[in-house]
Length: 207
View 1 (tube, rainbow, N blue to C red):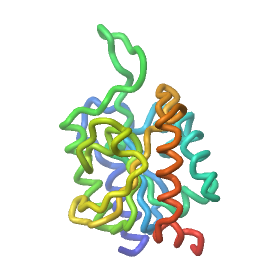
View 2 (view 1 turned 60 degrees about the vertical axis):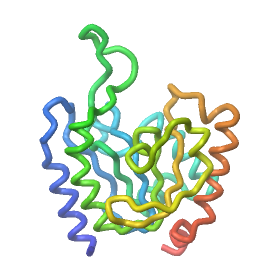
View 3 (view 1 turned 135 degrees about the horizontal axis):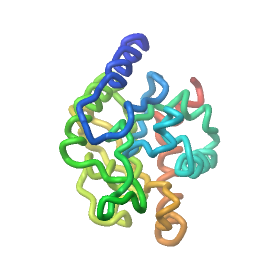
């Protein structure tokens, strides 16, 4: 797919208003034709305002991880196609009608509504390496019980008709300490090493 057609697809995504409980317009990344695709969960409130995926605290941690592989945030955004299971900010968790704690987890209908766009992106990009970030994103591609059983491994799977290598990462949220302590810390490093060695990732250096 030419980049112009990808830009048109993203423009259509940004016009989507299927989910009435979502609290922002869809957030999209740079329309880069890349063989590496990163799939997040859903934008947070800062991403809603800035209109960029992984634009705040979790993003700072995520890009620190990739900096260890020799690619900074600006390079990453311009070389890796960034998308998400849901493109809109879902709002904060409500406890007895009051916003409390973290962000609300998108429901099955919202995930299904947004999946049509993800299918189109997969078809357009035809990624060779998919990096799902966080348990929600990982679970849309493969069954996941414990992160310890998934992170640090590479899987060859078909996702929306595209056969690709899948290397999952934990969510870089500050609310989780899984990636800061063992075995998570070591498994994260193992996953990043697998990403760095992947042919599709190495091709980024030549772009």
